[in-house]
Length: 167
Ligand SMILES: CC(C)(COP(=O)(O)OP(=O)(O)OC[C@H]1O[C@@H](n2cnc3c(N)ncnc32)[C@H](O)[C@@H]1OP(=O)(O)O)[C@@H](O)C(=O)NCCC(=O)NCCS
Image (cartoon, rainbow, N blue to C red):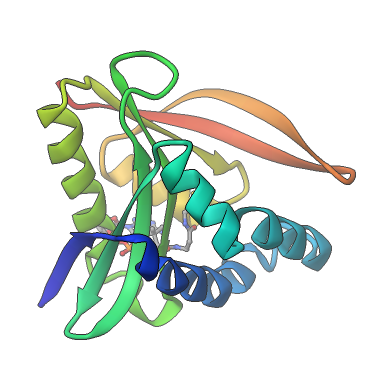
């Protein structure tokens, strides 16, 4: 059985471990190894994760099977506009993908977002990450617009912004 719970700061090490195990496979054919290292370093150092929680209002949910953590997602209520919740991250360990855990995490965020009065979820996904885009489409998200974001060191994020109406 999969259980989902909000993390406290001491769980961020689990988030980091799942990301380190999932990113290389997810982005092997999409980003250079240099960019994968750069982005993991930038977003998944424990200090960076703590800053996301304490200063930026990101909330991490972890999905567990028994004692084992299999995936996480991070969301921010009322991001950008007052009525939209942003999904900042969602990663499921490679061996646990395709078993409904991603859907469960998104459904949990939908519940929380609605409870807090938001009308939409939105997120950025790399435009070449076909599997993730198809997953979001399956859950009812639509493509809103494309954006290229300069993240320094000569790297960009070449993204699609996708949105889901929840109210
Ligand atoms: C993308 C990801 C979060 C999806 O989570 P998941 O647990 O593997 O997906 P689920 O098993 O919950 O799938 C939910 C539904 O989407 C469908 N789906 C999942 N992946 C799909 C794909 N590649 N193509 C088409 N449909 C897909 C499933 O069939 C399922 O449909 P159903 O509800 O009708 O049964 C997960 O696979 C993952 O972590 N991938 C690597 C990291 C990544 O790309 N993260 C997103 C970064 S923006």
